[in-house]
Amino acid sequence: MNNNQLTPNRRVMMALRGDCPDKIPVTVYESKIPQCTVERKLRNRGLCIVQRITSYKVQYPNVKTESRHYTDEKGRYLVRTLYKTPYGELSTLNEPAGFTTWHHERMFKSKEDYKALLFMIKDSIVEPNYDYAVKTVRNLGEDFTVRDNFPLEPMQALISSYMGVETYSYEWMDNRDELLELYDALVEVARKIYPIVAEGPLEYSNYGGNVIPQLIGVENFEKYFVPHYNEAAEILHKKGKLIGCHFDADNTIIMDDISRTDLDYIEAYDPGMSPSVKEARKMLGNKVLWINWPSAWHLNPPEVVKQKTIELIEEAAPGNGFIIGITEDVPEDRWKDNFTAIIDGVDEYESNISLD
Image (cartoon, rainbow, N blue to C red):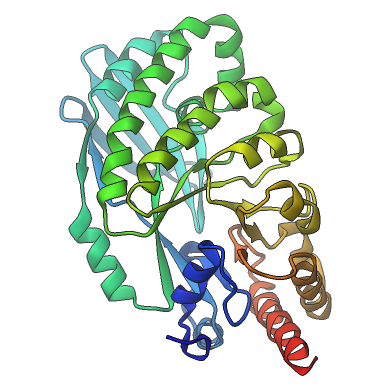
């Protein structure tokens, strides 16, 4: 297949392996773009939709789960989920909100929840779900790139999934031994997943993400995050698979550490808050840079969006191993014009290059 016949998916895969396709790939998460005429036109122009799935499933055979859906007095649609363990009940309260979910109550609420949560984590059974992954790829076709996903890094799972930032911060200071016991249990679950993803049908996988460097600090990032990236990377690389991470915060203080990991690509990187694309390309060496088109920039008019897209590509020159992604919600009244302007910017840049 030559460059003139590249599908959106193959264009992304070429870039992920460090090559330079016919033009810079542009991607968007499946949950960030509704199906409509504009979406179809954008796909026809090369926009690639990122479908995020897992090639495995995790079950908890000895934990009984019950969910109750209801509308509260404020008119909010809420979901209360109970997790019943031999050591007590855990619960969450979530509010589905379109493309996202508001977490009103996390599973871990106090020191009394340690035993129940530890039991639940250790009760995890991980099994391949390869048929689902194969069917997803086949059914979606080449306008989509299907990405596997490891769970959040063990420490990040405690922060983002189970505790929330404030509770985690108190527990880190007051009950660190118990917290680290949960961390160790999550590490063992992650190690069950690495070989399943490596043997699976998908070409690449994200490992966690949403790391908050200013909360974690450099020392803890090196101690509790980097080793897991490298361990998973070693297993995936033996099978020819790629691995990356969703670094969407201000990564300034951990850029050197990221550059020394065995990760193949850095995804959702936001040059509006982290070092610029030009700086990141220098600092990250041969790692593929898959940016999030900066969310704050979507407030600009379409002509500025197009120009900023061209400037991002110029900073990434010569363009190999570079992808423009949209990984965050875009205002409902902006996405059609802005996504079109981003594609216009890519096409205009490539047109000007071909004329030179």
